[in-house]
Amino acid sequence: MSEVFEGYERQYCELSANLSRKCSSTSLVSDQELLEAGMADTHSDSHHMEDSARREKVRKYEEFVDKRLKPDLIHAISQRDKVFEQQKIFADLRRNIENLEKNSVTSLRTLVNLGSEVYLQAEVPDTQRIFVDVGFGFHVEFTWSEALNYIEKREEKIARQIDEYTRLIASIKAQIKLVCEGIRELLQLPAEKSLPERIF
Image (cartoon, rainbow, N blue to C red):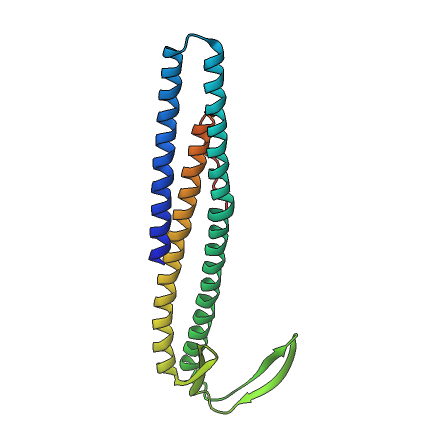
């Protein structure tokens, strides 16, 4: 994930440097043109060229936001949501095991969802050992304490993943805001009043 951060940082450094150069060169060019050119048509031609270059730069920034940043943001939010789902599954499993231990349940009867909301009554004669999905289609048989130990480690890893995705999402949002401010500056529009944060 750090490669993603570095890639964004590198691209934004280039973008902001280009933006600064463009803004300062635009103002320098227009100042020099005004001082050196005494004729209105020369000023008009250079102004037209500046507008054309400015529009092209704005188009590139908008394309970067729409084709790169927004899709990356949507993907990062979607990935974080999947990790949140895993977190909930492991939290539920931990609570169930703790309830079995607390109530000294050695056997139980339950309903098992076979899919499409079709349930089958099942009997579990020995609850002391359980099978836990460890990923890639593998299930491992654990005692309650082994399962709780495994779940604790997975929950720590999941919490780190959520933090990483949250930082990535914040970074992408900051970069979208930076590029939008650059576009606004190029278009010489007044700064936007701060609005409630939107999720793209």
